Image 1: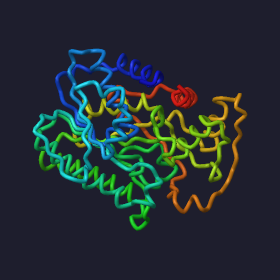
Image 2: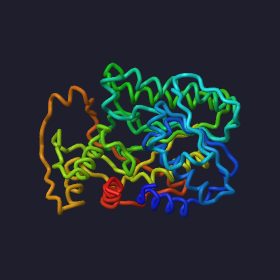
Image 3: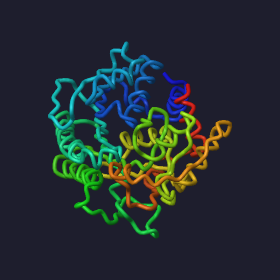
Length: 350
């Protein structure tokens, strides 16, 4: 395991009191090789390895088996992890008992919103229907749906930090809305199945989350910036850099996800983000170039019109969460953007 990831997971395990709730349980994770859910797989796996008696079984549903085998190559020797190549848009059946389902399969990169909008929305709608039915059939203890802060749309400045009941403008006739609208529908699927059939569904809405293991080809600006620093290239701004975002380190976010899975209220949504680490894109670029000042990296501004035809630019100028609901579950983020992005860069150089 990457040394930075191992340090993060050791710290997370030491800081999380409820691992006993996973003893002898089976956890199904969809999209398991993706950036956010992979850290959950890593954490539960590490827990098994360090605490042999815990006996957590992990079913990792992935669309690309080869990618997953590479991502979890260091875990292939262990029988507690089952990697199954399966598209969640198709019905999944198993005779195994399942205690927890984490549905995180989704095309979250903006580069897909223009090029594959149908594929983007299918996992959030059809995939959610298939897995919530499975949750009902297996009578799971908890079902966790990974939504997104994109569901809020364009809210007013005086509504930021955004509370879970606040929603703004979102145009369903714009192709970029394929992601946000289908996440909204995914949430309502969860709520409807909880209301009508009692499925113990909870929802997390991650804001901008970064950390070790994220794809540097993701298409999101902070991933591009990390890739530039790792490769010793100047940081290229493809806008005026005025848009503001709140950035949350993956270790902090992972703890929040697990808290909601175990202790979140059924039928409720929870913001997961770090409102204390809000930066404009230009400010983030300046922070990134200072991570390794010895490289002499600079910030450049290039408005690339050809790129913008592929990349579906967000119309949201500022996004930051209100995390009062998560604080009631005992969570607050603790890692600054300066430290978190430093650790992220180091993880790619390890």
